Length: 256
Image 1 (cartoon, one colour):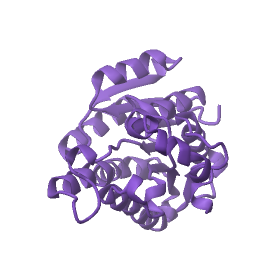
Image 2: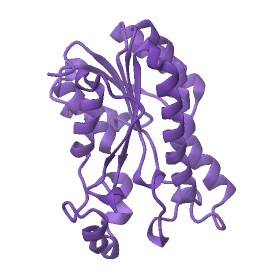
Image 3: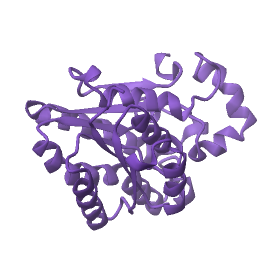
């Protein structure tokens, strides 16, 4: 119950890592507002969370700054204060044409950055006044190992890599600037995690065979709960002296 008495907003809460983080925060005693554009998925997160009275779903398109402002205002109005923000919403840009820089489409570049990076800026911009009013808090941004290391042909989504690297730069700048206000900003950089977004990799025998080298700790994909455990630590007072870090949860990928 490390988060007892705390309040949190979790984006991307309709599935995958965001859902796991919302459930872990609830299990640790927090009241949680979940943001996502998938209302049906949010309802499922609500029903499966084990503490439905502690979870508030709000449907929101995180790439729309007006919707973000309105959703944050509603969330804080219902929570009465804000202590933790987990920015977990994101998407692969392959459907829009993300790929190697010589073939990445303009739409692929712009939409991938909007979904994965600009949405986090909108969330941080909207929530920061409330964290300042709370005289401290924790922002946790979901990055990726691809924001830290290069990717070969199996992982050549350059707009996605740029977005995830941008999250690190934004987070470190915020960590330094807001440290005097006791607001901590950290990044979790997962490796391959078994989520709906990684279905392409899960279905590839070639990539599954590579996991013994890429993620040698288990030779398999991680789980959303692996990331949620790290998020619970960074959200809690156990991490009161931790800010500006990038925490890989990657089974050893970045250790090479």
